[in-house]
Length: 332
Image (cartoon, one colour):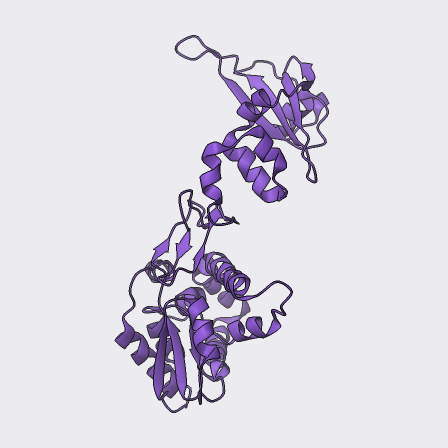
C-alpha cells in the first residue's frame, strides 16, 4: 500500500529537518486541539538533548500531550472503528499501522532505553526521567498509528510534524522539537544492525550500537576482528557471547577450542560447547553425500536443542521428527 510505504519511509528518514514545516505542523496541531499556538520553539539535536532542553525550560506551562496527541488519536480511531466495525477495524489496522507497529515501536523503545542509560547515574532513580519521556510525542516514530488515519483532519497537524522532525514535547507556551537521526542502519529484518559503527546516530553524538538487533557497547564490534575462543568464553553477557560465537563460526570455535565429539553415528557427529551461565551450544556435523562439482563432499553444521543426546536425534529434529522416525531411504 502506497500510503503505508510513505510512512515507512518517514519512520526511517534521516538528515536535517524542515524546521519551518515542522513548526507549522505544531501550530496546526495546537489549533486542532483548541489550544492557543505556542509562543516559542526550542530545537534539540536528539531525544537525549531534547530531554535536557525540557528540563531547562522556564515558563513553559503545563504539558499538553493529551490534548495534542492522545485525544486526536482516540477521536480518529473511534470514527474509523464506528464506520468499519470491529472486524473491519482489525483488517484496516492490519493493512496499515499494524504493518509498521512492531518496527517503529521497537525503535522508539530502544531510543528510550538509550536516553535513560546515558542520562542516569548508577543508583539514580530513573522514574522522573521516564515520566518526562512519556510526555514526548514521537514524531516520525509515530508513523505506524498515523498511517492508519489517512485524511483524518484530527491528526493532520501531527502528521505534518512527523514528516519533518523527530520527537517533540508540547507545553502550553513552548515546544521542544528534535532533529531526525543523521544515520540509521538496519538488517533485512528491520532490526538495528551495524558492524563498523553506531546503528543509529544523532548530530549531538547520541548513538545506539547494535548487532542484528541486539544492543552492544560502543566499540564492541571492533573486537569481532580479533576474537579468540578464550575471549568468547570470558564474555559474561550471555547474549553477547552468542553473537560472538555466531560471528566467529561454530566450526572454527570447535576446532580451535580442542572440543571433542560427544556422539557419533551414521547420520553425523554431535558436538557440545559448554558455556558458563548459559545453555550449551549443541551442533551436529553432517556431510552431504552428494559431491560438489569438484568431487568434494561439503560439511554442514546444524544447531540443535541443548538436550539433544545423539547425532540422529539432532538431525531428526531439523526435520521435525523423533529419532526413531528418521530413517531416510536415500541421502541427498
